[in-house]
View 1 (cartoon, rainbow, N blue to C red):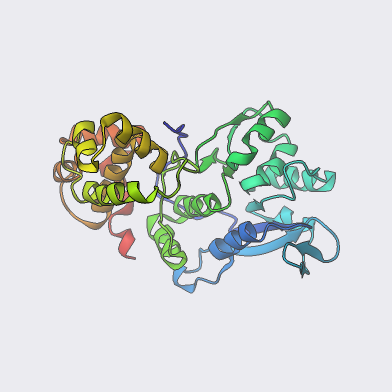
View 2: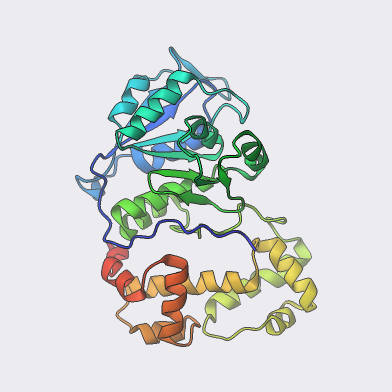
Length: 337
């Protein structure tokens, strides 16, 4: 089962950051996808979000034009001095896991952190943050290809594999490139609430939330053809019947496999166990009903397969750090905004 990291839940009503300026780092050898994620979430004009939305700037760690893969050269207006104005700094990848981090960049990031800026890394960008010493003793993650290298170079860190992101408050780290989207949406949700994160996700055409404990990758990201015909309809059936008390025997029979084969192939296809997968789906559905309906907690617990409100409260508190009633008070109706 993948490791679970308790990322920070919204235990109080979301509030925009006091300093809305998000600064993305640019550097020679820039990782374009990760850089694009930062701009798409925080830099794209969004007048529908009102006056409290983020401001955005770019700071280059290198003088002159910088290069990016694909034969691109990019001119950046600002240098490292821009980091001192930031409320949030995003490090969108790095040249490589073994590339040294310049001392002036390390100093600028430490000064920004001391000024109260949040530091966020995507993928290999964690190596830049680790070079500052600010991650000492903290839980962090990175792309699965780099976890061993990160452990070896920085044994003072608690490297958590098989999660999409880790939120340590003022420092946030994500796994591979696409997990940067998950982390950026998580930060939007933390700052501006569910409605804002859902709105950004809709424009990106991505899920507004994937669990922070989801595996970074599956051994078989797409089931083999003869398995896909069995498992894909099963997933649809489970989502449509979350109230059913499914057993491994029931699921394996529906998939036409032995229990042992089913468990192995389910793990390979999803990166988790049937029990954890069902729990995540039930919690996701419960959150949706709490946001979108006026149904009682008892009714939602029954519809989502928790049986009783007590059981729903238990899992909500353990997985999300908040009660269903408090969650509804914060987010009721926001998803339609």
